[in-house]
Image (cartoon, rainbow, N blue to C red):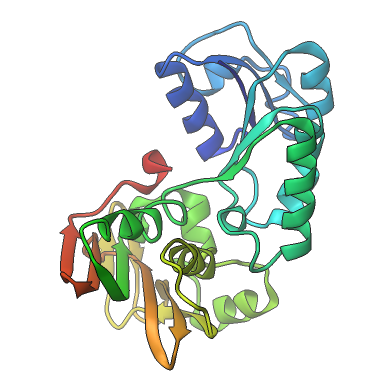
Length: 295
């Protein structure tokens, strides 16, 4: 299979490395960073030269290489992501994207979701949003875990991670080390995103389990450190932002049918936990999953 990488930041380079290790033919990449254009994709991925370069535009890549699947890791928002990968879909190239809002695009982008579906069907391409969260830990995994259940009343899924152990762009978007007032204002203005995709995960669960959705509640709050926290070389002092806590609830027939919680905090214990109330009830807990590699 011939694959290409759109966006060669931290995640894009990791995707390229994993694809090469798994035996895929990586035929090139695309990035807007002038320092990366013309570079060898293999060298950027840390595996040595493969003789395939990074182009400054998707159109240039498509002129020079035949592609079966394009891996995209550039943005969390589908309106921006689609502008970038649209030429590929129109030419029958399938897309696998880490764009969080593509995991369940019908919530925030219903019209755009319909357009992507129409274009992909016409060209014979497939378009998939995938990742560790959303895309697996707080949606696909809980759904799979209901397989032994005759009935399901509710699902609660929680993921907590140590933000200090994540890559710098992730720490930045959850406000690590910033003053609480400054980060709260940037979050309010949309300059920083915090965690994206909670509603998408919750609604994906509801769709898979045929839960009638009467309402969706989603919120995200920054957490200030009440003492000094040190982890993985990162220090957060009292009053500084330790990370964020995100929550999403899907209500059905007057009750909480799905509750998701995501906590990214410097120095936090890492775990995932899924609790299914039903027949039978099931509780599962892990010791944490490496997010970047899992994506």
